[in-house]
Image (cartoon, rainbow, N blue to C red; front, side):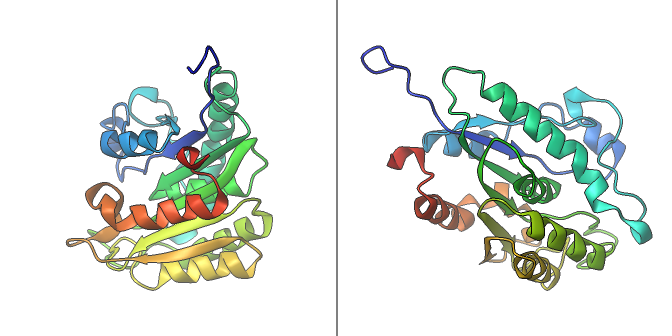
Length: 239
C-alpha cells in the first residue's frame, strides 16, 4: 500500500507438467515451483499455480490423457486445462490486489502446450504466453528424441496458431531428449505459418536432458523471458 492506495499486481499463472504414470501424478502433491515462484514474484507478479484436476492434492480423473501413442488427441487433453486456466484467472480477478486485465500464462512441458492452447482461447487476463519445453507424448526413457505422433502435435500447434490471440515465447533446450532437436522448431514453424505470433529461442543444452531446464538452469532462460516482458511492456517493475 502507498498512501492508503492498494496497488494491484499483474497475475502470472504457472502451469506444471504431466507425470508419466498415475503414481507420479498422485505424488505431485501441491505444486509450488518455489525458486521460480520467488523469481516471478520479485518481478512484481502475483504468482498463481493451480494443481490441475487429476494431479496431487486435486485428485480426480485423468482428464488430460491424450490417448495411446498411435492415436493421440492432443487438443482433447488440453481442453480441461484451458477451462481451469479461465476459472483461475476469473477468481484472481475478484482479488483486490490483482489486475484482472493484463497477465501472463507460463507453462513447462505439458503445461507449455497448455499455455499455447490458452493463448488461442478467449480468456480475459492473458496478454502473453510462455511455452517452456512444451508438448505431449514424449518418453525420454523408452523413446529418446521420438515423441508419439509429432505430426499430430504439429497440426495441433498449427490450429492454435490460427486462433492465436496474444504474443508467445517458445523456449526449448538443444538437448531436450523428450522431443528431440528437430520437432520443437517444426512445431513452432507450423504455429507461425498458420498466423501465430511468437518467437522461438534455442536454449543451451542442460546436463543429460534439457527438458528440465526450467527448474535446473533458470539463468539460461531468464534473459529471454525478461526481454519478452520488456518488449511487450508487461514487466510490472517497469511500470
